[in-house]
Length: 259
Figure 1 (tube, rainbow, N blue to C red):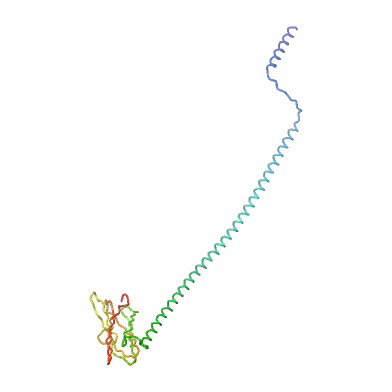
Figure 2 (cartoon, rainbow, N blue to C red):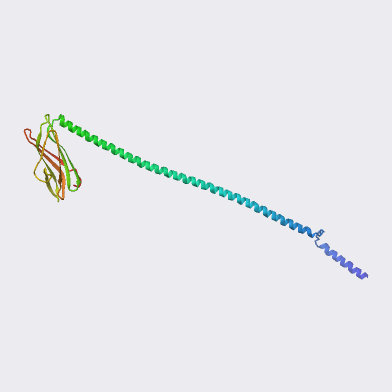
């Protein structure tokens, strides 16, 4: 009995020594409540569901606001684009109007310029005619008698020319003067000098063109230029008959190009 007791005491001492050397943990005794944990878990699930629903609603509201803002911006951009297109169309119309107006102004200016130029040419021609008639009717000049005033040459058909020779008489007493005039063309034909005489019939020849007038006479005729003939100048020789016979000669440059 004593031996058994001694062994128990020795084992107890050893166990206590072992417990004394190891780390001891504090133990808490709680009541056993299985429904409590289930309720906590259900509350947690409800909280997560509410949190998820709130998150969804918040995201949905934010998405709706963003969508509304995007639609509003789209409408605003569409409106601005429409206004910009209208402005561009209006500006294009204004540019077109300005262009047409500029063309009309240019055309009007050109017409005015041409009208002024024509009026100036007409005025110059009238002044020339007035000076001419004054010289004929009021001969206050030293060079009196028969005069070769001017020679005009025109061509509407290639190879054919129309001439107009104006003769005047500057005298104190206007009696009839008569005589003949010879017109000759000097030029080149195939590189050689050639002279063509113009007759009263308009054909080449030596016959003089007759004239008879008191104040002036415009001698008009037409001639055909030989093929290959290039005129360079025109010589006019006028002879008057009677007591105060005169001989006049005047040379004109050929006014037409390419004839």
